[in-house]
Length: 102
Image (cartoon, rainbow, N blue to C red; front, side, top):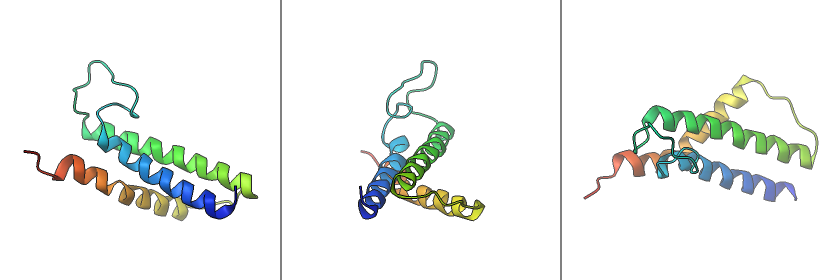
């Protein structure tokens, strides 16, 4: 896999992963826990978003390792990528909480 394909695949994966918590009522789109209300609470969606951020980050590190050597990053990199991940989740958030349903 070349570098351009890896970058676009990672961006697509991040966009899908950022919107998954808001587009369904299952945890990680797989598991429906008993005892939790049918519409997931916002705290559970936010926790799921954070876990998926780390999963996508791990895939990104794997792509970087596959292409070449892994560069060390400081806290600023992770703050920016988390902010971008939250921005990518905006369409799902709008669909779940801001659109009126008749």
